[in-house]
Amino acid sequence: MKAFTYERASSVEAAAQAAGSNPNAKFIAGGTNLLDLMKLEIETPTHLIDVNGLGLDKIEATSDGGLRIGALVCNTDLAAHDVVRRDYGLLSRALVAGASGQLRNVATTAGNLLQRTRCPYFYDTAQPCNKRAPGSGCSAIGGFSRQHAVVGVSDACIATHPSDMAIAMRTLDAVVETRNKDGVARTIPIADFHRLPGDTPHIETVLERGEIVTAVLLPPPIGGRHIYRKVRDRASYAFAIVSVGAVIQADGKGRFAVGGVAHKPWRLDAADAALPGGAREAASALLADARPTEQNKFKIDLVERTLGAIINEARG
Amino acid sequence: MPIHNKLEISRRDLLVSSAATVVVAGAAGGAAAQQAGNEMSLSSKVSLTVNGARHELDVDNRTTLLDALREHIHLTGTKKGCDHGQCGACTVIVDGRRVNSCLTLAVMHEGGQVTTVEGLGQPGNLHPIQAAFVKHDGFQCGYCTPGQICSSVAVLEEIKANIPSHVTGDLTAQVELVPAEIRERMSGNICRCGAYSNIIDAISEVAGIRA
Image 1 (cartoon, each protein chain N blue to C red):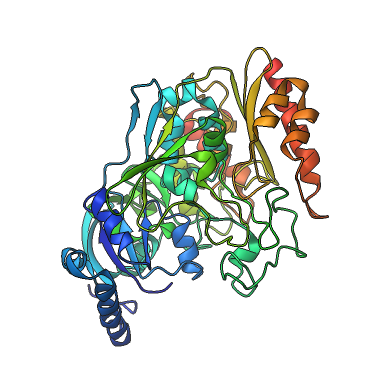
Image 2: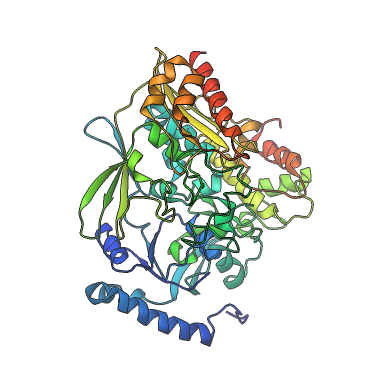
């Protein structure tokens, strides 16, 4: 790990200013992903701004009947919150499908959204990777790509976003609330928060330097059956090969987002609209533009089957 | 501290530190640099309470909680396995919750309360989970055991606190104390010897259920 200086931020404004004035600074909250990457010198900040003392760890009702989740609410507390369990069950389910108990006790809501891909070539510093070393090439294209993205990919990168929580947030139309280095707040729909890789896969979100996530907002509850189904190589503590989060209403209408297939949670209006027609129709609409590799084209079928299982469960 | 600590900052690191301090202060500039002036060092003071005893440490900022426990406080019960949060051997309880001590920095825990396997119980006065691991042969080589034991203690508390897991049925009901819940919650602790079934037996006995 490279040496770094460290400060405990005294306020959101001070944290944003400190990050805005130093291009080599990083915020640290739970640190479970950042420290892992710093040990491997994939992340090499020279200054860490500890934001844990900023009081962003509360879950509050909003005036419109939704929920405001502080950026620093840990995964365990969010999954265990009474209102989340009752009204946003999909979010609880997605959270407890991810990581381990130890990690969920530390990992935060904002950190979960900002975590980096687990592409093995991103992690292997001896290999070219456009995300880690822009312009060096992509080792996954033409390499072992079973785990990689099938849709929204580019010639520069086929990495996936690893989050389970983000799939639920996307399905529930969450909104990310931020504050920039000048103290200006903005809200970003989760659909627009993560970027597709394009030719700049190292730029993963629309956040600007010094912009800090302060909360994630959930709109009022929408009812329906909340189901999260994760397909992985072992029954627990593994990243998704494919995951599907869905809210299905009694009339068969609903919405769904898919993980493990793209650089961001993957959801399309056309696919939601096709949901009453069944899994084949909806999955086909969702993945119409897929560009899988020989090794990961099985994910196309897997999405349909996983969605089919969810639809059956919702009917049952 | 009676034992010379080999991880204490070297002269070379100090020189690097001074140089980096100048660079960062220069980059930050003006008011921000002044405001943060006292913090701009590659090492920090931090006070931790570990197993009831208070420790004042001056650590390189890079020092993980795991390395602080092992190399500075010389509590070597907590083990370093993968050092990347994948194996759970470094599990300790911080402020009442189990964490991977390898994936958190010591400086992030100013005023924190840490319990390690040494603090749960000692020979002659074992924690019930420790005694059950012995009784049920919940280990072979023993390397993952301190992490397994800290996790086990916390898992039973998490179920009692009604924190849901991946195998929880009804999210709005009280979480059931059943072996499936224990198994799922222990998945962050890997045992290469494969003592899992005996580990579940040990935890189940303490929980008062049949494995």
